[in-house]
Length: 489
Image 1 (cartoon, rainbow, N blue to C red):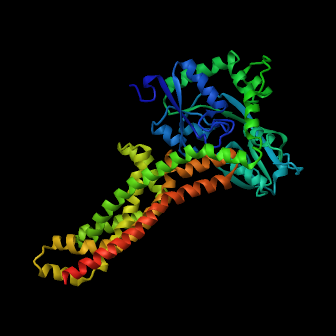
Image 2 (image 1 turned 45 degrees about the vertical axis):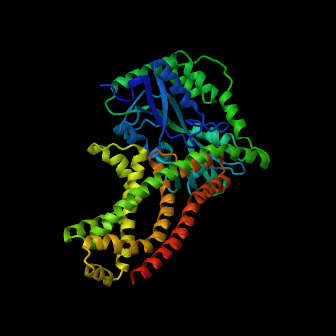
Image 3 (image 1 turned 90 degrees about the vertical axis):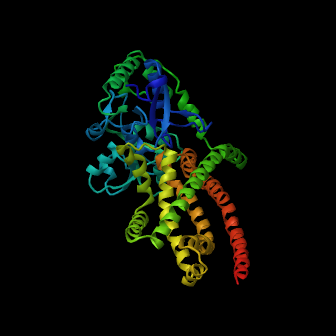
């Protein structure tokens, strides 16, 4: 059977390219270009398997669930081959062997071994061998991070005394900065492997052959040397003892790109370059939010009418739905719909899953607003309408709902603005909306403040028209109600 991932000669592979230097990351010099030593390895593997490798972005936490869901065939993200990981996935042979290094601020001394880290606050990346080393060693206060850049920022801001991270991270984040340094010897050994779904042996054998050939013919050394990651340890591990003396061109390029961009003119030029990305993020945020709001309003009206006018079973069902949805976190609902439903054959795209999750969530809040609106219309209105020979349904439709609607409009607009902000949660299912764009840019350039202002501004601009709309609608509805009211008398 041909799965979508192998058809058409493309091979889908995933990584978390948010701040993943030097593995897979966005080129600081041109944001739309992906690069990294694993990116280069995958390009070469694709070439040898005679397929076009296609990169898929996913959050670190979503990488393995996405693999099991069949969104892609391979995951390449400095994933360590450990017994726990081997329970969940099938690994290729290792393509990189390294160990842990300690990174500290320039002025510090003495923290150059695991023993010396006792009694200190040490940062590391979540779910890594480094974290296990720290846990096994007593009285070290451990802080774990998803993104390397956040850990490095905390070390700079003195929230941490040291970092213990894989050597490639230490080299790119520690050795590259003027204010940090690597100390002590390498600790322990880790192997990175390419992860596949359990049982995908055919793929594993092909990937293994490609990796073995790359080690044998010096290609792996060439790739790693360009990134300044070829080490005596790797030479011993691969058996490639040749001295190719390749200049670390990628390392030098990255170092230049990250060198401080001087004055505020440069900074503004950099920000101007982000505008297309921010516009794309804003457009996606608006599209998800608007579609979700349509679902929320339609379902909300239905739930409110069920709860207000329905029979007991209907009232009960609507009540349970509203309580459950309002009582559980939206994030869990999104993950459940995206990663949980495929078990039952419901496979939604990230966009659809985001829209459905937000719509179903907000429907519960809208329902309560509408119910409050319905309750605010006096009982006498219904009696009067029925006295005028209207059916109950007509009375609800023509007399009650329009009056209830007026009290609800301002609340609805506020809800839409909340929904716009809550849509940031869909970034967990691979949608690059505004908040995801912020994480990506801020972690690439270590600039949380300026880029934060840009993204915050984008959210404000998106919300403004709706604030205006709410005021306008309130005024118009107010006039309409007064006119109608006098007309009836």
